[in-house]
Image 1 (cartoon, rainbow, N blue to C red):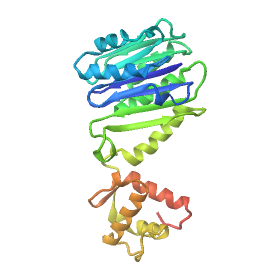
Image 2: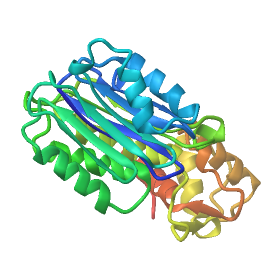
Image 3: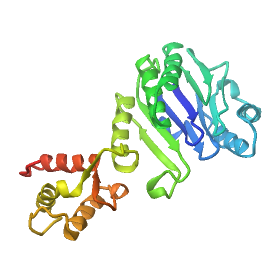
Image 4: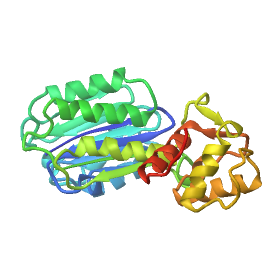
Length: 290
């Protein structure tokens, strides 16, 4: 009743999953930075994921870790599991009692698996999308999930989707390993909604802007002062010089909008943050010249 992909690029490990099932992200994905990722589905047994990750951390490869874990599960013929390690080895298992269409594909650094699918094309297109997409692991996972959804996905319909990507110290302010962690628990088009949520997560929390997409503070000082004055963050004159008062007002606004991860300590603003400020001013009906 689910299709998923587990994968790594040697730094990040992650899982993307979708299903006609409430809150699939609460049950299927499990991962550990520097270790690996597991998807346990089709009458999912989350204990398998925890055990497999412990076995991977102890040094076992994915085949041995999966085999050892399944040997402890008396209902393994009802299970489906995909496993990848940070070393790039991957494996998958589809029990004989998983509802058709059920199967898996294992490639270099990834495994795709699914059950109650519209057909094998779901997994084939997921694998192809993952292998051909350029970008970070999160981009490849999202493309693979979208490809599976477009190919028919779960033959019962759509309900939920999730993505989890871990990177050592890659999370909020470098204080966690959670690079991306998003869930759509109940939605008529969950994969599309997951991509929409990711665009907000990326804008707010990820530091992966184009290094050339920057704007000199001095070139937009008047506009920023006018907007921040209208928003109640700046009390000075609109004089067009990016002074200390302007900087403090900008930082106060950025912090309130959850952009503390995007504040620069030089003479530039990220283009993405500036465009957000402009759009916010337009949304509020502020009179600006930009």
